Amino acid sequence: MPDLRAAIARYHARLYGTPVDPERFFVTGSGMQAIQTAFAMALGTGDEILIPSPVWPNAPAAAQKVGATPVFVPFAYGPDGFTLDRTRFADAITARTRAIFLNTPANPTGFVATHDDLHFVLDLARRHGLWIIADEIYGQFHYAGGRAPSFHDVMAPDDAILFVQTFSKNWAMTGWRIGWIEAPPVLGQVIENIIQYSTSGVAAFMQRGAIAALEQGDGFVAEQVARARAGRELVSDTLLATGQVRLAKPPGAFYLFFGITGETDVRKLGLRLVDEARVGIAPGTAFGPGGEGFLRLCFARGEAQLGEAARRLAGWITARSAT
Image (cartoon, rainbow, N blue to C red):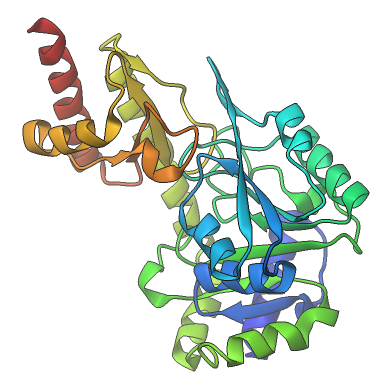
């Protein structure tokens, strides 16, 4: 729908401060379809794609779906949280590497790439002729003030970057299943064909709802970010007070990725927490290499529910150490 593409272009100009041609935007039936479409364009059977890990598991699955191999590059972890291991990243490139996937701010770690990180990845991609698939869907959930750093800040117009986006996070429209790809207009026919052969397109009423979100939803997005910021502080401070967690407050997204001292089998631990603390939590091993010893908790919840979950977890941790 041309009206939606134009609305996305106006939103982009507000967010990044530069005008852009609406022809760069292609509406998809979810952020996941945007990722699948981007991977289908950039990858083929036998190709490799570098993916920092831990990572949302749907990303490597999308690579495997098109016959490519996800090459996991574990983040470095320290007192300040997760950072990009640049040496390991550069060393992971082989003759079969065709693309780099970077989710920033990241699910599940809360990692946020710095502008130096983005320059590093972009320089690698340019030197080796690689595509970058940039998943910046949590870009407004950035707790250092303002939006997170973006490839839009460092790229040239002709760089080989495919941006994937969704309405699910900023505007809480998960059930609407609508997103978009930003790509060079020359790829338009390819993108349109891939979408035509899968879902044909996105229903008009969903696109109208997306336009309303873009044009009237800035206040709602600000409220979402403020609520997530408060949730991050509430849960982090409650768990840190136990003195028995490995935890760095995440600079972005809305997930807490933390460990509990002495607990290494996080899959079993997750099941125990459901039974004993009555809190549902995801084991870090669900997010690939580097997730061992970690748990993921989503803090994009109401204060009452989140506070109760934090109290139950802290109580369980404290009681465990007392026995």
